[in-house]
Image 1 (cartoon, one colour):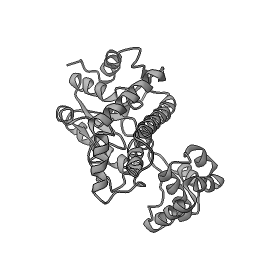
Image 2 (cartoon, rainbow, N blue to C red):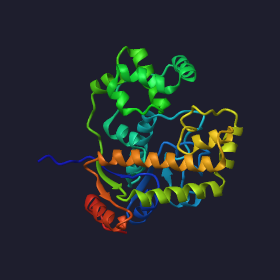
Image 3 (cartoon, one colour):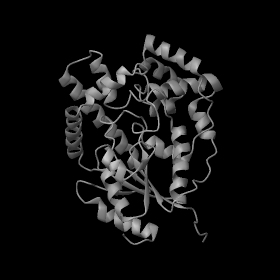
Image 4 (cartoon, rainbow, N blue to C red):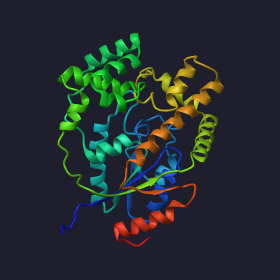
Length: 317
């Protein structure tokens, strides 16, 4: 039997509002871990309240890499994340810590571990033309066009996911091939880390939905709309940027544009967050090699202790 000598890493995954950050911090108190965020909203500076970003005191005690690393006017891709995450993991390893990657962005976890296909680089002029066409006929129509040529991508990408529809159409226009064809031909190398996957997977969505609603209401009370007003005042942001399309921010931006009432904004924000959690849970169930814990039925810390102690072959501090 060949000995696996790859360095160790831990993935801590789960839907929004499942308690990932609290568990990661608790584990960091007990093991020599270096925390790395896997969250497509936390990378952006100024997206604090609506992204449920850990507060300054938490980040001071438990530093997270890949938080507040990008201006919201500048999109951040899965490829950007993979490059940054691999560098962060190497830094933590060199410092004598085991990298613990914590978050709920499945696309980032998948890109990190499985790699990315060799796709053509973005073409700003082409993107602008696709965006202008979307403004004229709608993203749903462009999704239908994309799905007619690439049904696999059409089934995977939601009709409202403007960023991924735009990228799929861009790839087809630049390469003459579909996104699926290029992804399937990509050669993936073995991931250079041995990974323990932990997943917080609530079985009762009623309890998760209640926590989502409570947290969204707390965000509003904390000044979420004021935060979005400050972002709007920067003058260089718009509704089609990935940062502003983040769950909660899109609904707040539209409300401040005069769409709907305050109650409607609240309801739409909670609904969008629940839909995000549903997608995250669906993805997590495909991670068959993950050790899952239901945070509503058991304290995940003791079970995680057992898993980490065996994986790291280190005692609890």
